Length: 413
Image (cartoon, rainbow, N blue to C red):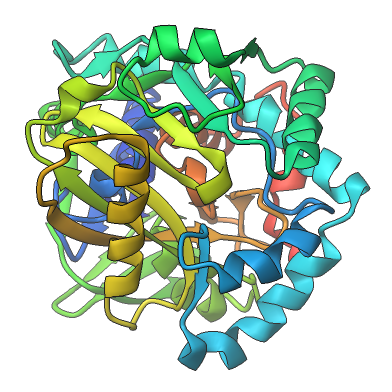
């Protein structure tokens, strides 16, 4: 097969940029198309910055069904709904509830672990070519909890043992030794030694994008309106122009559904809205990311300050930022740390989520020259490089030695 085929990628977030770099390694001629320049305020900029190879436990689990009502009613809880969006969410929620069995949970955990296991080595391949001084720290990630919902914590620990994800349980003294500034609200915790964190995800994303350009990659800043075909070859139509390619890849996160609908596939992609705030000059208060599981939020020390992230809000792409969710993050941070100043930078981003909590990675059901990589929910940042590596091999018709069927969009037909 001719290697200098023209590949068009719709979406220049971390998924798109990593895919572009791995496709370039195979000598493809790659064009990225996005309505925004990389480095803008999208999910690839505003995430928690975790490289989380351990995070294989999905949200579709039997115990979540008993926890959801309490989460929704609690103002400090991790879950919220925009009530004007509830009617639109119902079909997705029904599919989600259907996938909350032990069997489905274990299926998701197994196939998330399969790709998470290679997530950091795949990044290392790309990171060899850029200067990351001071931008990635290898200090692990710590989760802590109080003595509520201990059955849920036990379930997670047992599943990680079963699938072989590395973890180290912590007692109160060990938590205090690692992070002495955190108030002693905790009962126990777990430490993921192999995990890393980004000091500035946006900067890393930009460096990878500049590497793509330096290797002869093209970028078109344009709004994609649709895809048509000329004898099986895809044509990307933008507001100002049309571009024809041999193959295309759709990696526009939460915005991918508009295009997959056009491809005649009803993929149940929804949007989990995530928030962050910064406390400036407070990144010294903790040495590594800390996640407080009972309230579903985390804190990461970053260049911009202490980034506090979290909450899951179902409310689609059009609703405005919720001040109550921002307040929730402020209160949660102050619950764990003393002496925080006024917060800055209120940010809202969109996580693309499928009801079985597995991403879609692979070819379109109906068009053999159209490929997908989206739906990575809370792990879009962690899985950027490995998804890009896998999809580049699929586009090149190469074997990956992985079982890729569970990520296919065909599971929804």
